[in-house]
Image 1: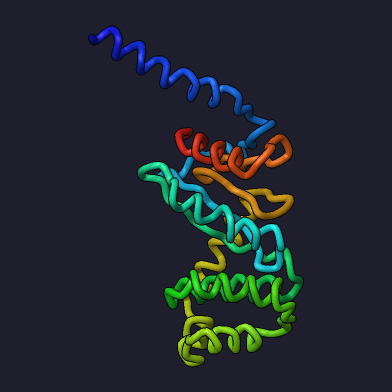
Image 2 (image 1 turned 180 degrees about the horizontal axis):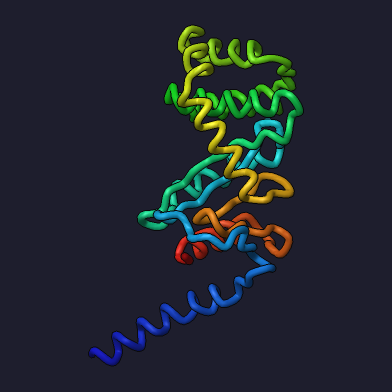
Length: 203
């Protein structure tokens, strides 16, 4: 009985090991720094509200990531500033404000939809403020959050994370603060997520 159980376990683990062995550094992922991995395993997404591929990723893949995270793994998101010219930082601020006010799910969708579905053009922070108000956020709450230390700190953290990730485009995934998933050799989003899940086990 014990022998049969060990054989069954070996058959279960073998395909997983073979799959992991197929993921090669420099092909499927890149080590972006020589330092230690994050204290807790995490998958970090980098995106921009101005990026149409990011919008698709948000609708189709982010829910999958959240629903299938390995136990103990945290999912984080970072808005990048290098798309959108002068509005890039303002969109990062909007993302941070939404988190501080705990309306991130509603406002992430609203911002993506306004830009890509409604073709709305944002030229100032006030344009963003009006969208928050249209989605039920008090203007005074938006102003207080937008000018708060917490939002500034989150923006600075996202900017540091973006610089550390050495990105060439978005959407992108960085795992454990150390491994950037490479999309060039990946055939599907499902494979992208499987590589990310695999990398959470690396230190």
